[in-house]
Image 1: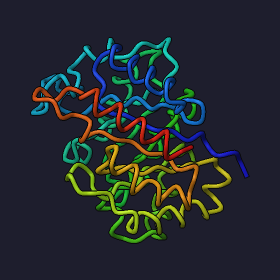
Image 2: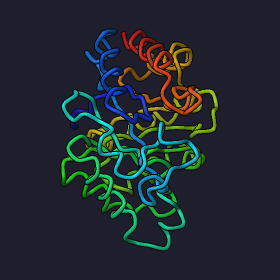
Image 3: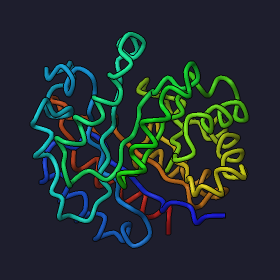
Amino acid sequence: MSERNPSYVGVSGIVNPEQQARILEIGNENGLTASRRLLIGVKAVHKTQWLDTENKYGDQWYPVGKQIHDVLDPELNTFNVAQMYYDPDILTLNPTYALKFMQRVQKRMGSALHAVQFDMLPYPERPMTYTPLFTQLAEHGYESIVQCHVGAMKTGPRLAIETLKRVSPHLGYVLFDSSHGRGLEMNPDALLPFLDAAYNDRDFAESGTNFGVAGGLDAVAVDTHMRRITAHFPDVSWDAEGRMHESDDGSLAMDVVRDYLDASARTIS
């Protein structure tokens, strides 16, 4: 068995190095970084990074075009992740789209990029289609995160996990998210069976794959729901986004971020 990839706590929707630096400062102050990677998520979706146009959430949440190059400081000790979303129709019509899109984001982010997360990757329908993406990431030293979202979770833990393993043997992390942007409260009872099956899977143990959860997280949810989950799986990772962006322009509400990170530090300790 391989040692599992290190656990993280994440904040997503970063658009400038000042936010990155402040999040790292908070994590250092409350001791979070002593035991967890601090994941910094940068949104890289079809409209903003393939079409290079602003989407409905604005550029204070989703950097547009080459703006993404200046979002992060590569010298700061954070785990920097491009969170990609492919257009499902173009995936079907253009066999080169997925790889070219990923390569574009890698080039734009440069040395600041450590991993790529595939949000809502439609792996249940065509799992082997995406194997080259994960193979290339591994060959070039990038880590990978694939989201197991509500649609894939409907098949149940065992089938979802078997399908994930058909995607690639190079999955660094699997992120279980039964809400996926719908604003639903996190439901530990829905997530625990998936984590149980994943952590007890021999193939995932041998590959070093680790696991995370997301959906509906803020300080209160971490203090309640994540405590239930970490009681069973202390090495689980988690990530927050939607509830961190409470400002009118979509930017991070840093007071909310601080409360969330402080709650995360309490939960881990």
